[in-house]
Length: 318
Length: 283
Image (cartoon, rainbow over all chains, first blue to last red; front, side, top):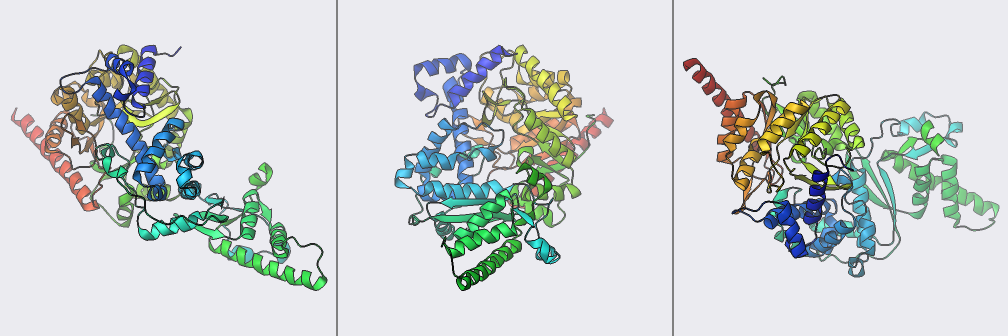
């Protein structure tokens, strides 16, 4: 039994009325009757009109927030298709967190199952890329432990290198996509069509027609090809880059914690391409190739401040 | 007197102005930030906030406390807010006298309450528990509203005044919201001001709104309207030298324009305080 039963009833009533997807009046005479029992009408506005102000603000505020988080999905789909997508999304995933930041977390997966995926099969992967970028924008800073530098590595005894346990900074994500979403992202970025369509404020409720008129960007669909991407934040800015399979495998291992020796094995397997027993000369050549490749990878990770020493607590947890 | 710091005129700190604010001195005295935007694990927003805090007082202003809801208080939310307050050491923490969600869902809107004795008791109890949890008193803001519940038996101003008195919290008096609600519901804004206990008002908000013909919408995307400046002057005459903040969240102008709006608030406040003193001397 709630401590304030009348208030509880009023809130659930109002919630149902203002979250109806087509507005209060469209839900039929029973809803209109409920609206009038809940809210006063006067000579300025009827109860239904008053509730519709809140119904509009509910939908348009959340849609505009998602449009700001997924501007390239909006650009690819167009305003009208995005509007319809979000109508369906909010019915399936009403916000359950106090932070608007979390609202779009389930959108990529939702797009994959939505009818929009029929005409835009790459859209869910593009949404995954945008969400990964959003998600690390305010992820934990790498301060304890701080990212490793070249000097940190150089200071180590060569004998310690192989057993050095490493991980990646918190503001880091790995993606393994079916479509080259990075190409779509780049195309839209270059065409300049992914500016956020509206601010997060109730002003959007005044001029929402404009959003639905946004045409699709007209960018060509990206190729359907396995695309691995790393996404990271450095000095407050978010970056992403398409990477090769061996780098993806190494970074995936690093997300769980791995030694340089383990990374060497991963790269070696990649260089040998899963070949069976090799001759001594061929094996030595491939080992050398693997060492050079790992060196190149480690250099780039250090350059981009991606690596940290695996902390004792992380080691215990894993 | 409110017992709160005399901060002068401030503005809401928004992403568009981060670089300008960090680049050198400004003519505003303090900043208000939306608490939830900084209740995050790390990254640029927190770094900016820490740097701004070195030079200015900060007020934390939340939009998701959900103080009027019949859902249980969100203790995780409150603890994160408390952690941010420990980090920032704000002049004070505020949120809205409203509800934002029920049944575990959030509308991310400031929904009005039915003004009844039952709601009053419910809200007062929750404000007390929030203040205990945070270890500090909070201020609650009157929201713009577009509807009145059939069940409401109290006026909004009586409800706000009673919450503040019974829960021993402060009031963030949004002058624009009073004006908007007055037009939407047909009451006199001066009546509202007259009912608010002077010692409870810690802060004023000023903002722009949109006239949609049948009603006013609190959009925060315009300069403050002349009628709201007039009402602000009345508020200063009644409540005194209260910290005043300009909110501008949509169609955000260049920094200089926002600063001008804040300076205008300062000029009106000085004038009203000076006139008030002259009247007192002449009386």
